Image (tube, rainbow, N blue to C red; front, side, top):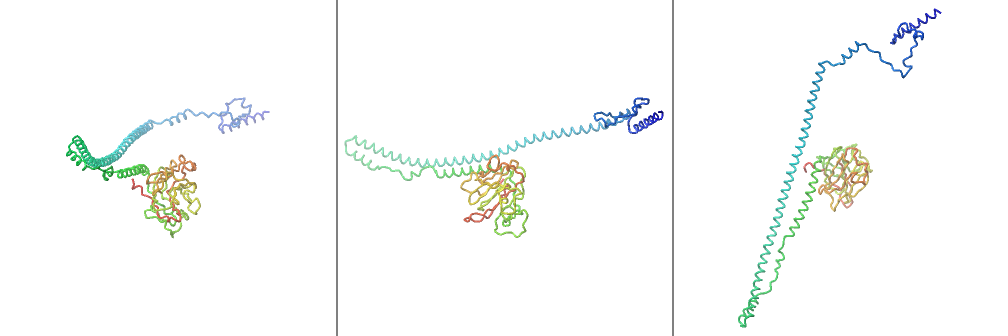
Length: 435
């Protein structure tokens, strides 16, 4: 029995020792309950809901940690200087931005004043021209009235002679003597009925000249209106040149990269991966991926053409719809074929708006990339030919009017009818020189 108790005590001591080595605090000496329970401690991971408190640190260690965490006076002073410098810089930045805001307002007012001066000059010129035209009409009126006054004077002289004859006859009728009657008859016989002169009908205002004036003023008004509308678009103009690598082999490009002619014979240069091999098409060198842009294409010397814009993903090989402007989702265009103007996108045709009897000699293309708008104009009259926009043109797919890729200017030579000559020349205009 004694041996068993000794073994138990030995086992207890060894357990306490192991516990001490493992980091657990041994129970105080003389704890009979713990020895009787053979120091059967509950494992830490046996109860998931039990909260294990951290071991308390010594007061000396806590003071050391607290002292290390507290910044020194030197550190606080340095930090204070940094914050004060930052506050000074921030205040200066705010003042600079406020000054810029005020400068923007002043600059805008200066610009508006300059615009007012230009329009005042235009109104002054128009007023002077109006006065000159009014003076011309007044002069015509004075000259016509002078000529009429001369005719009226002659008729009044004739009227006076007739009146004198009447008076003479009346006087003769009041006398019985034959002598005076013969004198009265003699005077009246010299008077004959006056007939209107043919030249009198020509005395009138110069109405033919006035009609020509009205026609000229109407033309000036239309041209002025077109130019005033075009001026805004020209502000978004940018130089456009053709990417020679994309041109069909039968398209010859001028040295400056703006003019294109259909040569009828292919080039001997090796074919480029971006080159159109079957469709007589070419695209511009610089894409538009944001903002607004405007360019013009001279088409007077071409009997069948297509002018538009396309993604770089437009197919370059083959003759199918994927390589033709307007016949796919990757391109938009206005084209002239067999004398008829039409607009195309996604292989859908729409008759152009506002098209009269004359074919445009110059096509203007205005692109608002951010709003998904592409508009085509007759650049001479600024008549809107077609607007590709989900808001204005519901006939086209609305889903394809938020552009998903950069857009390139694009042109295409079309085969004309047999009675027409083959297309010759297309020219990208230098709109920068028109501003």
